[in-house]
Amino acid sequence: MNINTQIVRALDPDRDRAAVSLAARLLRDGKLVVLPTETVYGIGANALDSEAVQRIFAAKGRPQDNPLIAHIAEMQQLDQLVSGLPPGALKLAQTFWPGPLTMVLPRGKGVPDVVSAGLPTVAVRMPSLPVARAIIRESGVPVAAPSANVSGRPSPTTVQHCIQDLSGKVDLIVDGGPSPVGVESTVVSLVGDRPRLLRPGAVTLAQLSEVLEDVDVDPGVSRHVDDGAPVSSPGMKYKHYAPRANVVLVDGTDRQFRAFLERQEKKGTYALVFDEDIGDLPVPAMGYGPREDSEAQARGLFAALRKLDELGAVQVYARTPCKAGMGLAVYNRLVRAAGFSEIKLTDRVD
Ligand code: TXA
Ligand code: MG
Image (cartoon, rainbow, N blue to C red):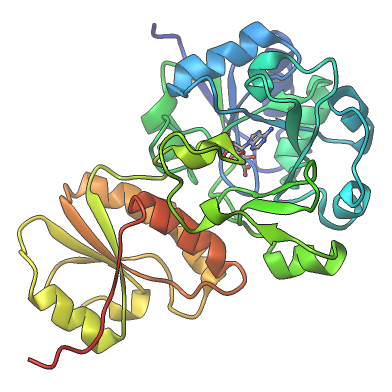
């Protein structure tokens, strides 16, 4: 079904009052609104309205067993969503909210099944982007919002990405400019025996570990979860962030990487590399950020993956990023885009 999608711009909640009010009113009325956040754009609906939330799944083509994050603007809204706060939750909220951290918490009675995909838990986040917070605050309801991409595509970091994926499927798209972080929020579960990192993001493992004593890293962060095996976060089961091309991560030095490319079929092949590498390779190359700058790589990665699709790439060899700090988030998105296929180069002696 095709609906009429309005597009408005809102960079500053005070100056762009009309756009914020329109978005808030539509959310209250059970409509679908694409809104900017500091991480990536989200496709939002009133989290307490199960019919509205159901429409998100239809618009994205999202599997029903993949739960959504409920977004709030104020701490008081937590009471509507959770049943009690596990140890550490309040401290994490005080330290990182508003910001790119999602906590998986015990689910409150008022949260519809469809938001949590029937799980006894609910994921909650308070975004920091002023326009996002203003829209949520004015709507007066918590806003369920997954990333505003068609399921399986890279998450959207510009309004153009949202238009490509969701025009005709949502009531409103709010253009808030390029997403300042560029990868989705850190997801940490607080419902098990120990806190567990389910998805790395801009709030790093080291930062979490400063607040919580022990943080486990879920194996699904860096490795493939076998079909049918239990997963801590349903999103881990699905191939994610993937362009249409076949992506392979390649870990090695500059020289090894170039030699590796020399040996490959060149037709339809692209390299996804650090910005410094461009121009010095035997196949066309797309940069995803400077080698030493994980934050810039996070901002650039999803747009680069989408551009490779536009160029008609068939095979993409991507350089493995540094995994420290926010680099772990960049690595996690890339290795998932690659369906966990990664080659480690060693010097050939032949
Ligand atoms: O930065 C973000 O988090 C963006 C913006 C829009 O806020 N949202 C986002 O949502 O990335 P989504 O739906 O694309 O990713 C949410 C992830 C999924 O992997 C999902 O499986 C997991 O969080 N998740 C949601 N609820 C969960 C729960 N109750 N238990 C475990 N994992 C959960
Ligand atoms: Mg997503």
